[in-house]
Length: 326
Ligand code: SAM
Ligand code: SF4
Image (cartoon, rainbow, N blue to C red; front, side, top):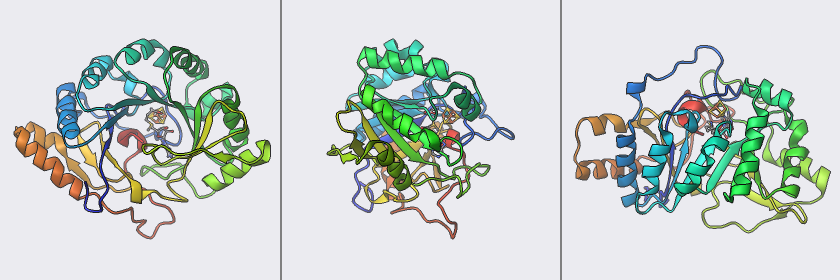
């Protein structure tokens, strides 16, 4: 529990800062530095942290990155995390490029919740946004995981005005044919070299209006207690759902239940705050289990009540999203 009465039950675990795509809103094309492998947490260190945090009340762990599936031996880590007692949900956020290959292993390890990023249904545009011509690999992964019974399968789409906003109806329309939850995410100014500008940002209110122009009024869907920050709706008769994540136009700090751990082992208590706590150093100093447990208890007390914009028009932070994990 933090100082504001929020129960911290969710850890976003970035396992690498590397990626096989170069999404223009996430990774700067130039001056992009990778962490050397000795700088990132080992699998032993990650498992130890997750064991301590689950004993302290974390129930959901999401692997993210960079692209989590590019880290060598990732299935070994996922298998070990799947065996930790107390983890109710082990989830993965991925760009989907390698997902078809790993889907069987993930299912066996107990992963059921998948978030897959997809900002365009047009192969040429997908290549322009991500820097790689790999739309068909992602689409095949989506078909495979639905067939295998993963659920929920959520599609994360970042909408950028003038870049992919004309595809809002088509992306929402996926929910008419498939049981996906398509989640529209506001473009955020993350990272010192972000390509964000206020003109490119489209609010969830505007996105929702575009969908309603195309399909009629959206019906709200009852939220489950662990629904996260998305407001969820459905189209008439659709097997899927449509979600909206609006960190800029309507922030959700009051119900924030999450911690983030970067690949190099820094705990971030708020996405938009550059303040980090160095867990790797504490681990490598040889702290005992009792000391580490106290270390995390104290760290959670530092979680801010909400983010401050520091006079800017939108909250931002200097680290890029690929280094934080989303
Ligand atoms: N590589 C994986 C993927 O793309 O799903 C996991 C890491 S990625 C950093 C996690 C999420 O952050 C993705 O859904 C991505 O779309 C989102 N993201 C990255 N940069 C963003 C930005 N500037 N604004 C909003 N969402 C962003
Ligand atoms: Fe890679 Fe994901 Fe960032 Fe795209 S959003 S560059 S897939 S980490």
